[in-house]
Length: 306
Length: 253
Image 1 (cartoon, one colour):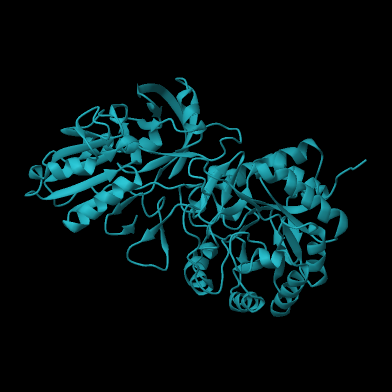
Image 2 (cartoon, chains in turn purple, green):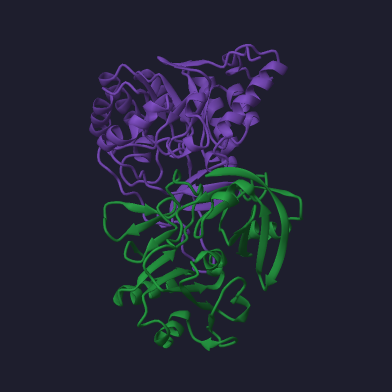
């Protein structure tokens, strides 16, 4: 019998549980749905969409590192129009809660994308990617400038009633400052963290392994950094946090909730265990039962620091 | 594609750094085809983190075989597996070699461990078709003939067979196939595939190349393993999902 309340609320978004699949690690849902029922998880965050299709970076795009991986995909995507036409019908059919991740090279482009997507009811929320480390324009350029994050948030807020989540970069000195800029300008939540900038070199050729030279580090290697960033935001800014960074199992997920996350996203683990999300839900239920927690949301920011 | 907990039957040393692992994996064995690959979970720790992709070398009964060369920590760990241990397999992944169709002679061209998918293919080529196999390797340690037929060998150092590369060997033996209706199936290092691609396209030979690339997932979500599309410049093909087998005219190597 399952009487544990796993539901969480983020802005207007009501999720049946706090488990989301992170942008760029679950495509547009169709492949991963072969392994699991997408309607069973809180939400899927789509691969970033931009106004026009993007080819992405040249290969090699992926490289494994100790307990982690680097990626430099470069926001390859089908573009907002094709996304609506080709990808949304499937997500609608499998009854999944869709958060659309948007990447852009200018504030106008973010706004334009949201305007186009806003008519589609299947999309319940936006995750604004201001922190991709792998593209020259936009992405991290915005993520490193809190006034740009403030401006993007306020402009996007003006054109949608739906939940707006700002995805923050860890590649800054004070992530809380960015979370505050997002909150003050109308964001409903922040997600943290995006990948950390990293690189790897081939010692024989002395060339970078990735064609893009640097990539975004993800996986268990970044979990301690992500936890510290979530905790920092949680202690300084009153805004719902969606924790991301190297979650491999339910224990990692619980840890993220304790340090301040209302919900969390699974990324790299989807590549290895496409059914990890379902196993994590089960593990969370057992943890709650064993610890007499009736509502998972009671666990958020329940850290004890002294 | 599914994930299946497979039981290790054996890990056999073939020669030099090359091994064959046999797994009992009934669900994957039932549906897999030559040219497809599987992603093996090396352990349940975080290093190595990602699964490792391997071509299906053969499938007999409820077993699947993978031939691999030890080239890093993941493949090294695979050699330590003992019978009856479990290994999680994700597959079968990708497309497969087109076996049916209008040709009389199947020419298999393999470089080094690129030989891996061909025992499976050789076993399934219809009986009414001939097979010639051209194998190339740096030296005799890289020549693995298990499960192949009608073999011609080239080594870079001349330690076995013809001294030179496998495409030179193939050209030298053109008499064997030039008047026949052929289909080429190839797998190996990129420079070999590129040379073969140029040769096949120039002579208008029907040619299928199995390529590899660094990938995280193996089923289309990470978008890591891209390859240039010869027909449309504005987007890449994915090795894992659109391939790994491509017509030699479809891709730019």
